[in-house]
Amino acid sequence: MLGENNFLMAADPTTSFSGDFASDPFTSITDVAPASDEDCSFAVSWVDYDNDAYPDLFVTRWWPSEPRLNALYHNNGDGTFSLITEAAPSKEGGALGATWGDYDNDGDEDLFTARFAPRPTGTNNRLYRNDGKGVFAGITDGYVVNDTVFSVHTMFGDFDNDGDLDLFAGFHHPRLQGEGLYYRNDAG
Ligand SMILES: [Ca+2]
Ligand SMILES: [Ca+2]
Ligand SMILES: [Ca+2]
Ligand SMILES: [Ca+2]
Image 1 (cartoon, rainbow, N blue to C red):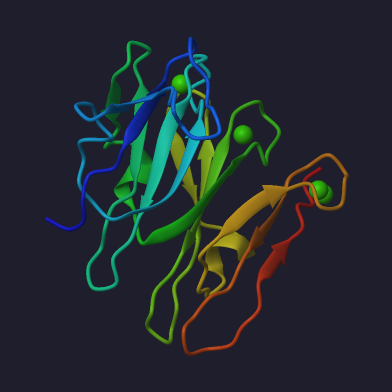
Image 2 (image 1 turned 180 degrees about the vertical axis):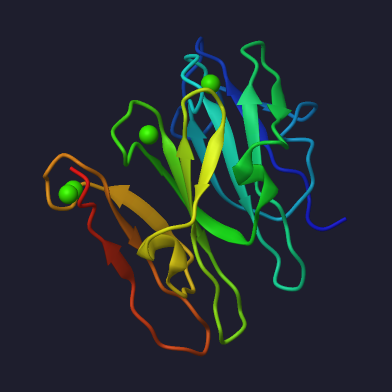
């Protein structure tokens, strides 16, 4: 098995950090997914993708020589998480970065993943539209998912301040030169 366990830390609200960490408020939680899942994790993000008021967790996974699937964990609200294998973001991988944002302004958080392939032909990024009930549709039309990229990080942001989320995907390759990609959202 590749890699080692991730760590989940629970904060104790009755204590607080001091300068020398003498009263560390965190407790290491090792017996629940995702902390007990071993794989090569990169970006992690908290998001309440199903709007049930509990923050859920998304982890990108990547390995140069073999496909690794991302992992979307649903927060069950009782301190446990369930890996949602049937969700579209968990069925694909090869992603390093991820960003959540309501790019279609329908009230739920959508997902964009920055993918990287070391081969000279690169790969493409992924956009998942959330229906708000835990079902994601993979978007296959448009520049943001059809450009050939070597992306590591990405971020939604309303760069032109017109009320809709635009997108930036950075470029990285150890031997190639390239530029980051800025996508203006013209839906709003
Ligand atoms: Ca939730
Ligand atoms: Ca949305
Ligand atoms: Ca905008
Ligand atoms: Ca716009």
